[in-house]
Length: 50
Image (cartoon, rainbow, N blue to C red; front, top):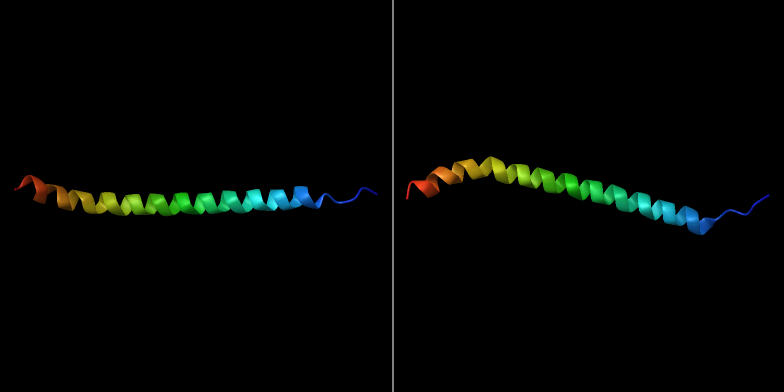
């Protein structure tokens, strides 16, 4: 019976965690950008009125 390759399994877990974290960060960035663009049109007319 072959011995388990623990270092490979650990690397796969680390890669999965990293991928999940990057997806979460990307989602947060997208939500922040969407919130900024929602508030930007309100600020734009005030800037042009000066």
